[in-house]
Length: 174
Image (cartoon, rainbow, N blue to C red):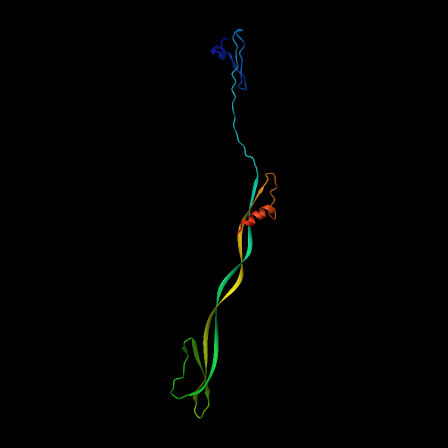
């Protein structure tokens, strides 16, 4: 028995779909075997396996703060002087002694002659204090909420995330 030889292969024909067809048998001793070949056509396509929705949410929370507040108060003390200013004597002027500002107050009085009378002095002192105070301020912080959706779900936005998504995002905002 003769294996497929060159003669047999040259007698084979090819069909329209690319498959070899055997040629008519020339002799009963010669067997013709068809040779078959498979071909692969490779392609790819996009498949939606799920959707993701990401939105930003702003949370507000109170943050306690400690802040020092400076306060300045003014103490005014009136001290009666009632001393006449002699002619030719210089009238006392505004002066500062330490942290106290002294402002003289004058009054003209009628005497047989006109003289300047130092009526009183205003002593204006300043005190500076610093007090600690506790208060709260509202701070805002944004966070991203990510939801995995099935590929066939509607595109409409939900008002609130699902309970399992809410707990996942709330635990991550600190």
